[in-house]
Image 1: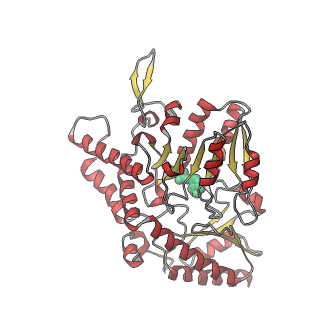
Image 2: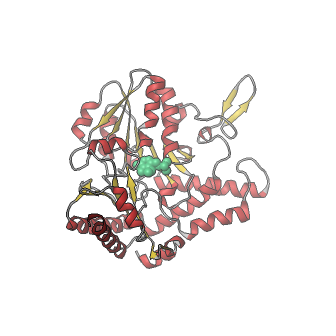
Image 3: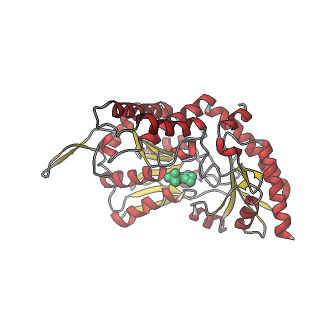
Length: 405
Ligand code: PMP
């Protein structure tokens, strides 16, 4: 990959922050957008904007084509069997809430159990907890090992006849661990239990083939894969989605409405009440094309190189604890420095133009497990460079000089 050329595609990266070139290492929170994505938004509003699925007029047909073309793009991106299995949502959080609410309504009752893991983001914990209070279900939690991997023996032991769903992250947003989802799915299916995979940190870095994985639900957010905010995906097997009730009521999701009885639209529209973010979907299509043109495997190789390079340099500093030391890791490094609060480091890095994330990273139960209030996290994307890793390490050394003085 020609990174210099790639960086030219991302206008925001040209910026200086506090008179230093911006080093953007907060990609696990959200990625920057290439010009093709930004232009797609502007072009859609300048040329084809009209509500989708409703009008016979020319513009409405064009925007419907753009929106449904986006659905076909996502189908192909995930290798889903049919576009009926691709539901557009606002993002990972809404996708998980949709499944919790709708699958919960259809298939869960008091005493049933849902298995998550200790490394989940809050958005794969709280929706299930809401069901604990609504339906009396119980959450079971897969513990992690010292290196930050799922304890697979403990996982096997958690499965009982009460287990009705397993919901785990593809990749941890804190530890970077790439979880063995193939194995989890195979164990789950041998017990007739469906699996939801939170792909927020997976889809942007790992080629996902939902048919090969045989995963029941796979969810991700557009904004973490170079697409705009406000648009995301729920992949669900047709056999599940068919049996699940609508999540929200409104326009688009209906067949026929009378005051006596309302019928629902077919898949995928049954789950898409109201005007969808069709401009977001059109722009997400460009983002997925962009990623595919570079090759997701090439992107992963590049990010892993940055991960290894930076990890070595960090370790050389001394007094640093890195959280997540799996050999199967994506481009995320969370760490702390002995005796120093992560916020202080984040602030001093910021003053040198380096954007990192600090805090609990929406994973408070994991922070409790690790016995820490928070971390500093650097996370990489396709446009980052080794030179930026050097800048980050130099800036960190400078910050530590000041903080230890
Ligand atoms: N799951 C994981 C693993 C994440 O990293 C994130 C975002 N940090 C989410 C879920 C939630 O994604 P969103 O805020 O885009 O809905």
